[in-house]
Length: 246
Image (cartoon, rainbow, N blue to C red; front, side, top):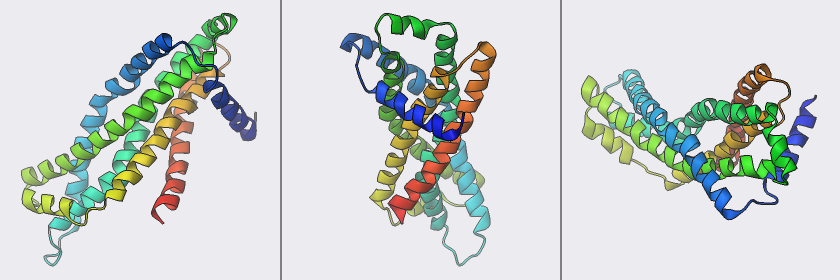
């Protein structure tokens, strides 16, 4: 099957996802379940990675600014820009694509190969709306909070790294963080996060929903979905940066 056919099936899937909604009570239960599975259970890994990556960014910046003519406050400024512009929205989304994407594909794919999706269709339920829409809403509304948390912990991790290593003072770092603050950068990061969250929910769902075969094919589809989700995120990141920052 060529790429054009896959793209066409993907958009046909999206059309079915947003039609014929289920009853409010059923949808609400599914939504809270997805928020727990896709959002709350990802808090730990995002917090852990953000803190230490923020420290690494600050340390590497400090080690590369050895000139006495360059103020130490630039370390905080560079770390803030790196974390807000690229690390928090893009790197965290790639991590979530690996963790969440494989879960989405395997769960939907297992339902497909065990004929549970066929049973839903027989009962007159729009299976795509029932399975995919709660995932889209859960990720699109919850992942911006994860990314903002990643920004805060990344900057905090940079401050802690500087204080513990002695390469720069905490005051200089905070001064750099406050220097030349542009609120649009936060808007840019949130817009990217919303797009990436939508892709994280829909691309793995596509691979899981249309999987054919048995458990082996579900495993292959999970790997494939993670790879393609990351590829699409990287491509979308380029075009969003081109449109929003240039």
